[in-house]
Length: 286
Image (cartoon, rainbow, N blue to C red; front, top):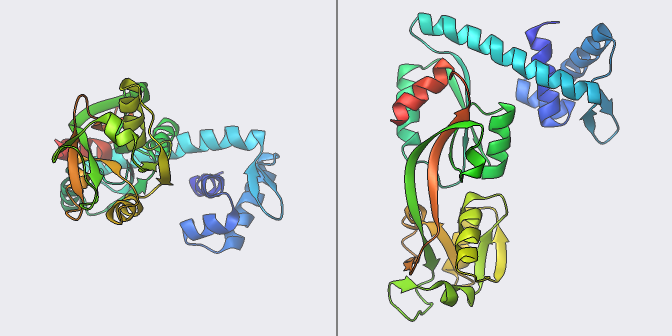
């Protein structure tokens, strides 16, 4: 058994099939299926249940993949230690991000690229709940994400910014006050909401619960661009972090009276000593 076999098995498990894993690994599908069959024969166990429509891990396969991931991480760490001793970093750094959350990540990535051109960076843009799971499973090395206090448990987390959210509306929509709105006023309006699991959705839910009000979602989306288009055509209003709303001058932002929705943008990683690549990114994030 070698590292390449482990990498293939993990790819099949994460991609959900041999064809998708082959695309990820840049090999032909027959090479992937042949590697898995050969490893299963060597181990004397079946790692995957195969049907005409899907490939799923067996119970033994689930346990094996967890161990395979740990082995691959250990091998990557060993390589990175040697690279660091030579003054350079190689390998792959997987960073979790959310839509609209950068806060200096672009500058940090530029600095990382300049210092370590041999390092491959993969950005995984997902909902906050999925990023939390990926950090726990260590399929993401580090994340720039808006975690609430409960989601931070078991992780090493550092605050990057605390940001207020505003109501974004079409200029055609009128309000009682020119620059501010109340939660009661917003609760009566058609609302563009984000899907459960989004950090924005979580912050808005908490703010309306604190105000003892319910809002009526007319649209539910999983894309900031789609939300902006709906608001721009005056089909509803939407709550956005102030930095994101400022990117769309065609919308009119209004602050909330009282306690507005907020989010804390953090850099988060699994507990323990960071890899050299993660440490380099943390330093560049400041």
